[in-house]
Length: 72
Picture 1 (cartoon, rainbow, N blue to C red):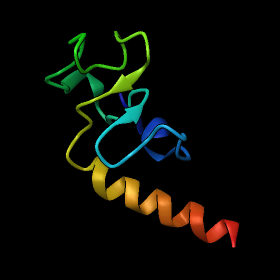
Picture 2 (cartoon, rainbow, N blue to C red):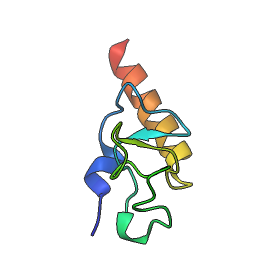
Picture 3 (cartoon, rainbow, N blue to C red):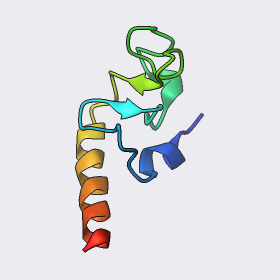
Picture 4 (cartoon, rainbow, N blue to C red):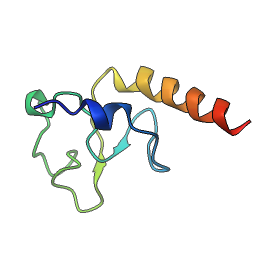
């Protein structure tokens, strides 16, 4: 199942280039860490994903620059 909406959604204050609030994986069914309570947002009480996909760093920068440019 695709998660493209979440991948492209505006940043959450807890999102960084190395972690996300909620699942941002475009294809969470193929995530090797899905359901791992140490890293998966879907099973952690704090909803933090500590193992976003490798493409997340690039997407984070893109979303951050988009958000920054709209605030000026």
